[in-house]
Image (cartoon, rainbow, N blue to C red):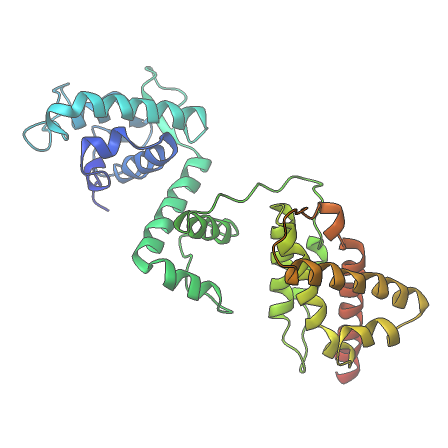
Length: 317
């Protein structure tokens, strides 16, 4: 792989100095990675990357490291501004744990890319691929059972990275990070059970997606959307129980305890209908988390779907 100069990503000095530190830092990591095995002066297998030698190459400054590329600094007369921004980005990378000083070196200017830094490079490489595909193509691929995006070795992180890229392109705020023990409507373990189901009668992709979007909407405090997605889920599942609508499920399936839970869940349809069909008024009030939280009842419903599907699959085996 050839060396990728900073100018190949950020063509002008304004592009560099106006970049936020995370963006400039990720680009800088990719640039530094490209020096491996390409520039013995800047990169050495034992020492890693030398910060001052790297800057000297950019600045076309003779520090006795051999021939320098080009005839002038990479960014011409504005190189001092760029070098300052690069040093700030370098410090940010070190602070964030993406670069570390290489141990055992006689001077402190030798750095190595950490494991988290390698992850940042994979993320940036993925973003480059997504940019080439374009937003519409990426979103279309994500709706397929086997999407053909995400091939940089990022493993389980790639799906999250793609989602973040799509949200950035759509000018949406980033998702709030999940917090250990944070309440969600649909438990991850229940979702895993749904994903593992097999059936000759039903395709569970839409049900799983409704559950995933319910969790996202509730976590992001989108309570109108939570109520309407809950209603959509209830309208979606009756055929699994051999019923025509959810009223029939709530009244006729299972024992007394299950029926009571489903009838309580059925009330959420009225809440959703009220929000969905209510026209604008002089005075409004907004739904709260407590109003749209049917997590316990939904879990009971999904548990029964898992049970009867497994039972039917086992009897057909």
